[in-house]
Amino acid sequence: MIKELSKSIREYKKVSILTPILMIGEVILEVTIPFIIAQLVNRISEGCEIEVILKYGGVLFICACISLFFGGLGGFTSAKASGGFAKNLRKDLYYRIQDYSFENIDKFSSSSLVTRMTTDINNVQMAYMMLIRIAIRAPLMMIFAVIMAFIMGGKLAFLFVIVMPILAFGLIIIGLNALPSFKRVFKKYDKLNESIEENVMSIRAVKGFAREGYEKKKFKKASVDIQADFTRAERIVSCIAPVFQFCLYTVMVVVLLFGSKITIETMGVELNVGQISALLTYGMQILMSLNMLSMIFVMLTMSMESAKRIVEVLREKPSVTNPENPVYDVKDGSIDFENVSFKYSKDAEAFALSDINLHIDSGETIGILGGTGSSKTTLIQLLSRLYDTTQGSVKVGGLDVRDYDIKSLRDEVSVVLQKNVLFAGTIKDNLRWGNKDASDAEIEEACRLAQADEFIQQFPDKYNTWIEQGGTNVSGGQKQRLCIARALLKKPKILILDDSTSAVDMKTDALIRQGFKKFIPETTKIIIAQRVASVQDADKIIVMQSGKINAIGTHEQLMQSNEIYREIYEQQTKGGAAVE
Picture (cartoon, rainbow, N blue to C red):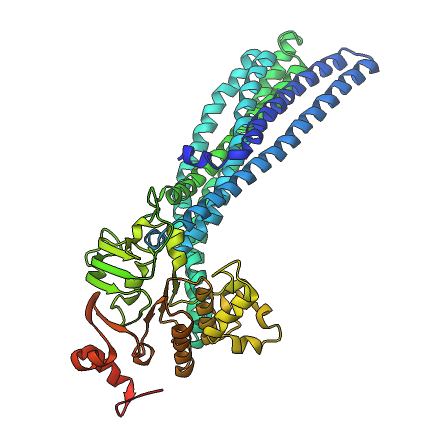
């Protein structure tokens, strides 16, 4: 896991190495200062002149300034290193997710991926900063302070050796008890984010059904669950402070009691006032170091769970990858399904598609009809390798889709999905997702084909009209037409409309289909629809049922031979005439 995460350090290796070096310098100076102060106290007690005091004061001032410089610079380098590490890690995580197929994305919920890219990475960033700074500083401070305590206090320094394991044991017990609560929190964060994401994305439905109260209760429950675990963990961790304070004051009392006794009895020969003051300072440094180590332990145990979740995403191998020698040119828009069966995961009991055999000539217009759950969308998702077949093969342009470069294939197989997505930006910005180099003339032509130009011209800013995130400031029908125009700009060999005209009226739907016939005759057009009128003039109509092809034929052929098609048609007509 550490090896996987360390790959994200990259250009921040130098500052990551420099930080511990600066911490070493700071620690050496900090343990030197009490030693110099002890010498100064002894000289003052002997009745030294002001020049001696000023000399020691100057040395102390220089040491303090250098220590401050090392500490400040170490803080800067650790922040730069940890921030850069988090930036690279977030980038690596995001890029990995972009390579995922739908199968990989199905394994992780979108809310969980958001939590991993935000909360989990923040935890790992904090842990990394502690590792290169405090985790180096604290043990070094403790070791050097113990050595100096023995140099200055002799046998009295054994007190620290006795107290240290007692305090360390107590702090470890506290940390281990807090760990289970921290582990549970991250899974509950996923649920909280899922609740927020679902509510925001479906806010219109929530308000339409007046379910705000229910959503608030659901959010409150998820929030209270997180609060309960965090409260329990923080309550346990808060025990560190009193344990630390008890050990600190006990050490101070014992050092003062026995140190004073030794000083008085030996007249300062074995132990003097300066040494006692140094011992107290070193005792403080030792116990503070232990306290910092305990906080590091808690933070690392908490971030360990975050690190596991991050590495889980990084190690997930995309189920759809490029072949070793990919083909970059798609010859034409012909399509072949040969003995294709598909299920969404290896563990799934039932196949979503079974025994699909189908040939489509390049340039044909194909309609796909079927009830909800008949796997119409699943069928077309195999064409652009959003999923790979479980059995059999899917061919485009005479070649198995797995032989193509993924980007080249998807550039030639343009899909307008059921859920139409627009991004924050102008209409032009959104349309150029289809072709970033598209000219204004090409954009307008695509919009005319998609019957979008008419309503765009009515906007004050026309093609420079700003689209809100998700396209919330345009209607469903307008959004669908913009998404069709975007797909057309790719000038694909295969165009798939997955129920993409459901929000437009029958007349506009017909005009869009007429435009396709006239302007992109060589493009294979696949139209998935709920309305018979949207597909009845297609070259072939495929009727799907329960993941299988029930029938293939023209409108006239299916009306005579297929009961399912005839039933759908009759349900959508009045008096035997199609509703236009």
